[in-house]
Amino acid sequence: MHPALTALLAGRPVALEAWRSWWDQLEHRTLGPADSDRAQAAALLAALTTRLPDPDTLTALVTTLTERAPHPGPAHPHSVNIVGTGGGPATFNLSTAAALTAAAMGIPVVKTGSRAYTSAAGSVDLLERLGITLTSSHTATADHLARHGIAFAGPHVYPPALTRLARTLYPLTLKPFGALLNTLGPLLATVPVTAQLTGVSTPAALAALRPLAAHDTRRTVWLAHNTAGADELLPFADNTLHTPTGALHLPAGTIAPATGTLADLAPHPEDLTGHFLNALAGRAGDTATHTIALNAAALALACGRHTHWATAHTAALDALADGAPRALAERLRTTRRKETTGA
Image 1 (cartoon, rainbow, N blue to C red):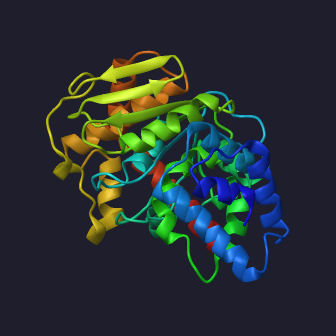
Image 2 (image 1 turned 120 degrees about the vertical axis):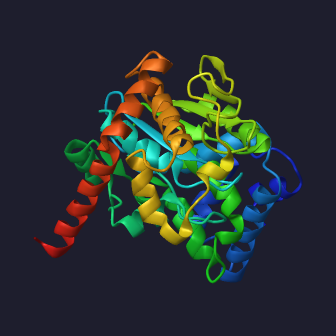
């Protein structure tokens, strides 16, 4: 058994070099026989899923994963990503809606996400249904960003070691470890942005991610948490943003009206794309509109495009009232159809 796994199972810290050795041996398939490789990989993920390790061990793990990923190149000025950890109450795809709204406000957005593990549809599932293309390389991401003001990044932004881990596990799947991958995923993605807003649904995940965010030198990371346990900012809940300069508290009703409930933000799996496109045009109810605008405003402040919450929120509401986010989504769908058909 590899020393990193032995220490992890015993609850002892795992140092940077031990993690590097683990990934080196996994890459070269020298952990042991194939069955041993699979068993050790499953044991590692199970241990991490059962209980996240101490902050130093977790920081070392994330460092050794991201240092092996291809560099995306320089960040576009005032660019931003929004991505959540999943979990918490079910809502429709608010972070994707906020990303399109921020892009319609003129903010460069590179959005990461994943398929659903427990929700009705993750961002990747939604984009697939909409017919919006994920980028396949950092070059393609830069091209989409230049052409459309937004890019939805594909799996190339995640460390290749995770792909090797999945292949080692086969025929087992990563689905049982979805909660772990959702928690760490936002800080594992290498994207060329200057800022990132990450919604966190549970106190345990927040405690794990705060040291990682503080250690992230690639971008400014804001972690959002609220009393409703959702991984987005909510106008009717008390929200806290953990930023590099300290905690920013946004009590219910501070920026947007505090009316509405989680029921107003429920997913619509029977009309996934139709409801989402209506929300992008401000036609899914006031609570949905203000929630999207609140998260888009946070993106505008995180990347430095705006400095006041009220003006950023108003700008987002104006974009939604004009239908600009929906028009952007429709253009992206048309681009995909043209690329597919050659028309």
